[in-house]
Image 1 (tube, one colour):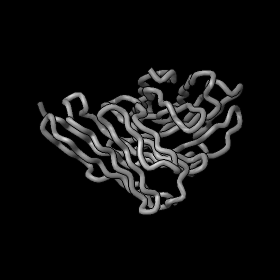
Image 2 (cartoon, rainbow over the protein chains, first blue to last red):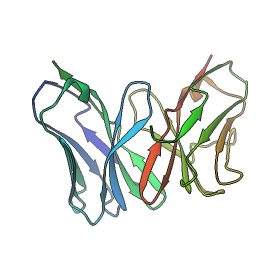
Image 3 (spheres, rainbow over the protein chains, first blue to last red):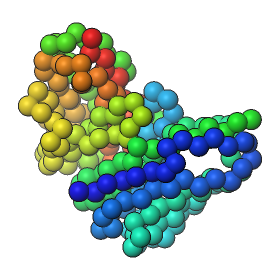
Image 4 (cartoon, chains in turn orange, green):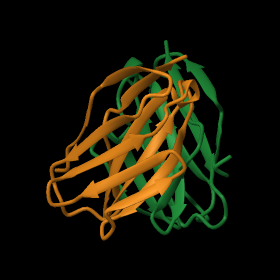
Length: 110
Length: 111
């Protein structure tokens, strides 16, 4: 059974810092991996999707990497802003099943 | 806007009552998922539809839960004889290819 873990559970940084969020998974036979953002009481917004054959994806200030062999993905956020404050979730997709980590709650202080 | 809408946004019910939630994905979404999320946790998979066929159900989906997608478009999730432990955010996601698009969820509170 696939287990997805995200570290740290919470992170607080001053505005402008670069930061890295970590995601690990136990079964490397994944189809792809997706990073989401969730604001309090809201649904999930897709940030980046990495296919299993890819190593990384970039969108603006966000860069996500995937290392299937070690069961790890990282989400790099450059020049963080207060508007980046949210919970960030990673999800691994294996056939029809998408399993989520518990998320990292990010606070960017002005 | 992801194009996936859920109704209602909030539902408060008394224990023992039945509730039904609705999810409307966009027409291109041949895949549809239901998830449940409690505070501080990631979403937990409940069930998956490919068009109108329900292909997978989690063991979390007890016999009090039933989901349908009659015409391969909108979907409903019904919970019968609700219990306090059913209180959670119920999320629906639609997709094609590999990407999933989530609705804003239905927050259920069982008193």
